[in-house]
Length: 213
Image (cartoon, rainbow, N blue to C red; front, side, top):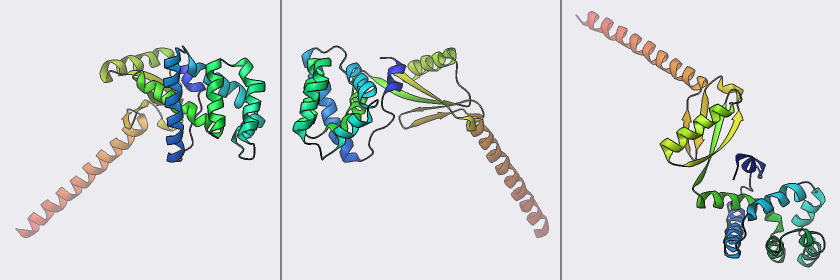
């Protein structure tokens, strides 16, 4: 799986925990069924359908999400317009979603399926923020260091954040490695302020000691 494929996936999922939990159930079932059926690249077909068909056709997306459209009507659309162009496995999966009234969760199911796939393959998404776009050589160096130090297979997701001024911020899960210039400047200011306060307190202490004598 390439980083380009990761970036082509939906940017986010619905934040409702119950929605994500339901999507996770269907995503796991999708991957398990694909493995049992010997499907080589089920997520690639799923992603292509989502990005190239559903996202590109707002009317289709609205139809999938609308509770006013009966499951039988959605099934008829799948049989007529989608199944002839899809693999039998993927068409069957869409039918399952339609019968259970879950086509509105298509985006969430896809995102959860990618996350589950990455977990099974020991892959980890890594957010890399920098003040300027990093070169391929810089990204390769970051990737190699992460492999060596954290023993993971990183999927880098670079982004540009001019407010960092310089350096990079790397986030792996809940852990953040911050070497940005903005943070170094903030830390320097903190140290200088603490030293200044310590010097003032030290002067006060000497003054108080002299007065006492």
